[in-house]
Length: 166
Image (cartoon, rainbow, N blue to C red; front, top):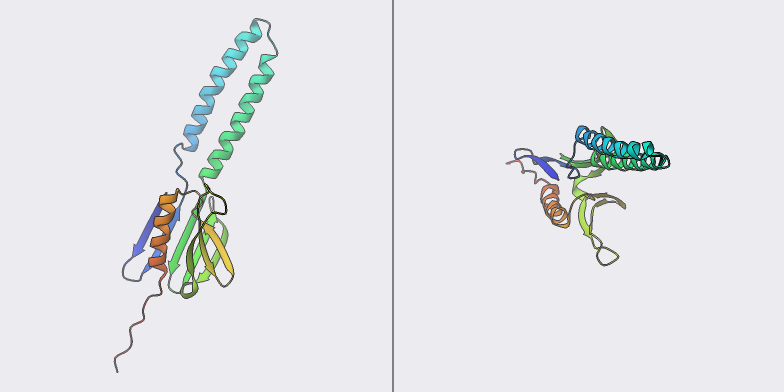
């Protein structure tokens, strides 16, 4: 998902990119709890019938499910913030706070959609300048990525400076 705020007066812009996360952390815990109760109730029933080997496998299944849900929720918390202010473009990536920051000069920035090396793979949206590059929008679908590339190209253009009247 892409959320953009633009100040028309100064041509500054802030774009926040985040994955489309359908479950909150609380809802994820609720789903995991429900599945755990059902799974353990069934395993306990079989245990009481003498099939004790079902309990360790039920526990293993729940452990794998817990890890998968945690990794999915963790990836869903990833944020990318692109700030276009004055003469620079800053890209910050992280979860709760910026873990990686790169700054580029606005006048030299190129926004590129790199074609995939293999058929069927998505394009890559890159911000490049002076031999450095950073990929953004990896969590977006192809349509959102193309639209964001067009918007960023338009927003990154250098702001014309009015000439002083003589």
